[in-house]
Image (cartoon, rainbow, N blue to C red; front, side):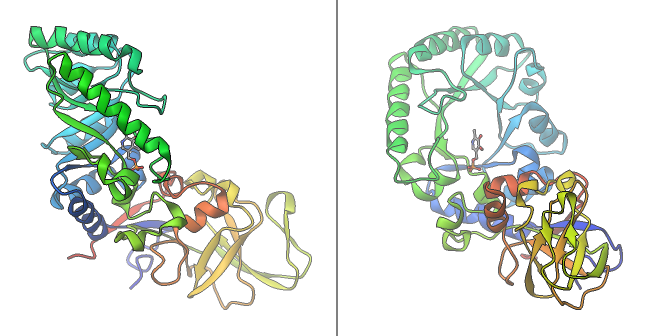
Length: 382
Ligand SMILES: Cc1ncc(COP(=O)(O)O)c(C=O)c1O
């Protein structure tokens, strides 16, 4: 029975296969030898649901869970995750004391962040991973300011308020494994570790690899890897290296039921701006999903779907709550199922196909799916 059939006939659903998540985490673990694995579950686990994904990842052996923002990290603890959690994106004045008390590892890129961490300490020291900017120019201390960050951290190590748990950075171009940028970033990283060691710092966990590094750049594995997108079975390399070739299984399938099906004569225009005109008498299906649910409006007039085993195309503009499929002469009625994307194993479009239609990356396709779409969990492994 399809997930959209009785008992509850929902408008749409994102089905998430936790067996696929476990398989992907185990596959990533097997690739990195003795390095630890941090499963990245930020942004509601790239749209898949943070708590169920984190649980599945722990079951499959994830040593760490990675969160971007404090609320995510605290929610993981509140849900009962007692393992190592790293959270790397805070802004001045955030309640770091709560995170420190909850035993969450935090990041610092500047001396003022060390001061804030130290001020948030009560009965246990703050565990901090010092971030070096190795060339992406996002977070991290630039190499010129790295010694100042180390000195600030060491001053608080001396007071017992801070423990240096790691040194870390982020790869800008690991989706292009041959790019010289990767090597240059790694060289800058290694030098930063040496500088820290020259100050007497034990660097703890050294980490820089995201999914691209984990899958294609073994020299970046160091002590720990932080794969996000690969956990969800999607390739960081898009169509260049499909996920199947990487041994990964896409975990999410997005389905809906047609709200309406109608026959229109040739020459009829469709959706806002009438940007598509039926070239001949056609059957149109109304999907009750739109950009209000996270479908990219840029995928108007081109995104693929699957109906009754056949590929069909979204025509006209994607609206806030709805979009229209050209069903040609298909025998389809309101309530029938349409698959927007999934693993692709049964011929359905993939998140990469949607990414192509929208001029974006698979990350954005799954991550933007909104709270209006219920997530339903299945488990292919059980
Ligand atoms: C700091 C950090 N580490 C790891 C990841 C995971 O990256 P990816 O999804 O490419 O594996 C991200 C996501 O962008 C990140 O911001």
